[in-house]
Amino acid sequence: RRRKGVIILRGHKNYELMCNLQRGIRHSLQRPASATSVDLREKVFDTKEKRWTKITQEGSNNTPPHQSSEFKFKDYCPTVFRTLRTLLKVDPEEYKKSICETGPMRELSSPGKSGSFFYLTNDEKYVIKTIKKAEIKVILRMLPEYYNHIRTFENTLISKFYGLHCVKLTGSTQKKVRFVIMGNLLGTNVIHRCFDLKGSSHGRLAVKHESKIDSSTMLKDLDLNFIFKLRKSLFREFSRQLDRDIDFLEQERIMGYSLLLGVHFRQVSHTGEPISCEETFQYELCLPLFPAANGALNSGSATPTTKPVSDPNKEGATRLSMNVPARAEQTKKNDSESQSIGKRTGVYYDVVLHFGIIDILQDYDINKKLEHAYKSFQYDPTSISSVDPRQYSRRFRDFIFRVITEDT
Ligand code: ATP
Ligand code: CA
Ligand code: CA
Image (cartoon, rainbow, N blue to C red):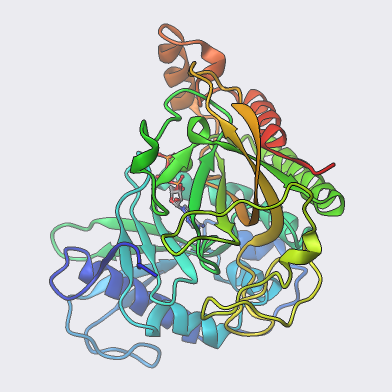
């Protein structure tokens, strides 16, 4: 299995930055913390409490000495994120190991156009994204509601955030880099196709030629050439949760998010081409469901379930994604660049889907309004990805329910 991205070794332009992030996080994790109940007090959400920690070369009780220049580190709402990790069943020692001790991270080739950088921990359990100040503000603003949402719906599809940090380089630059730590939605299985779906058609074609597609191509709405079918009970669970999640995002006036959908084909040829399955599909045939860490199938779990998948490396640890058996019916593209899904072909594949709602940190601010007004001159406004949150959520929902359906 090919590993993604560029490994960050000494000499890489972000080597120091990532070492600083790891040092800062280790420092925070080692700070003594009293046990808190999951009923958090208002105080812990207080964002005015700005706490910078100076991480010096000499080190301290919580930080080993280091060679690079001293820097400042900020851990936002540490009690909230610590409690979120507890709720999400992340073992503190394992977390520290994943972020700080498993070896160098990888920098992914910047997949979005927003200018964010993405890093993958060496064990591939966590994705770390650099975010803007405005995005930090969005997280902090909605943190109490976000916390409640995650706490209430253990099957939520919304990105799980495990930590929010800022590294400030001292010296002449004083540059600040802000990070959010998320679970890697695509970490637990071999992903053969990956789609980032928003429900808008504008700029949503990633590749023009089928031959250019491989497992690392991030495909978009107009590239989608499948309809996914879930067994009734799974579909119910999925649709109920998707509705709750979309409502939540709409209430928070969030837009621009997408459904990240990783497709694992259960049967592939030796050249990696998916092999189609019988039309009358028996879900039971594709059991067992969850892959073990080495890529082999784990015979332990016999029944498909919508329960989030526990980390296959360790029983009962991190929940990373929803991971469900499905069948995929291939479709043939329509010629127009329209949003509609292509013609059905009657060719089916036996798949496991990994999905989650990502990129939820953009709210409907003035910039978006301006962008919308500007783009409206040139395009059909409803096809643009920046509309208002209500329109956005409707269009997103409509699209997702056209491509992920109930198997009948
Ligand atoms: P945009 O240009 O749309 O604003 P962005 O820079 O904000 O993009 P995201 O949309 O958050 O970036 O993510 C871009 C890509 O990074 C996704 O399409 C996906 O491939 C990958 N990615 C993001 N979050 C995760 C995650 N939690 N797990 C796995 N992959 C992820
Ligand atoms: Ca995005
Ligand atoms: Ca974004």
